[in-house]
Image (cartoon, rainbow, N blue to C red; front, side, top):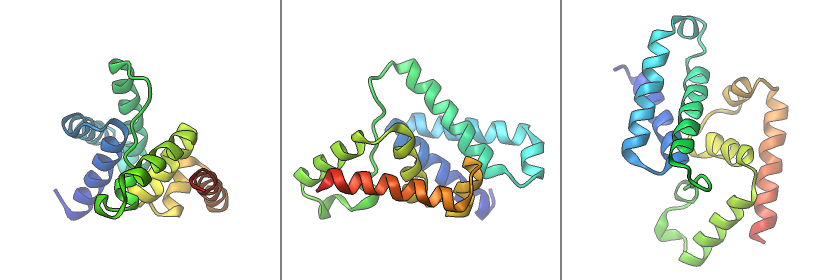
Length: 150
């Protein structure tokens, strides 16, 4: 596996882990997403591998989520926003509750941008919108989060 593929694998794995919260399931879904990419040459040749991987991983995570019939997705973004030792349990709980007030799309947008460290330009391409629109959505989600934390 090349360095680029390893970096992509790590991003997709983190994304799946944040969506599902289970190491083994995240590894399985990440591998399935890559297998599907390798079977579909069109996206690789067009340079849209990252977009294809995130879209495929998202759909696979949703399928897994539905199979488990869980009430809501567990997001663990606070681990990326601050190390556990830096946040007191009360603050961690407050952050989790504030994240739950956001819509699923807003949480996913923040997870892609900050937890998976997707550059704004690539994120905009993935969403099929302009960089400005992507930035505006991120800023709106952050503002909602900020208001809940205050």
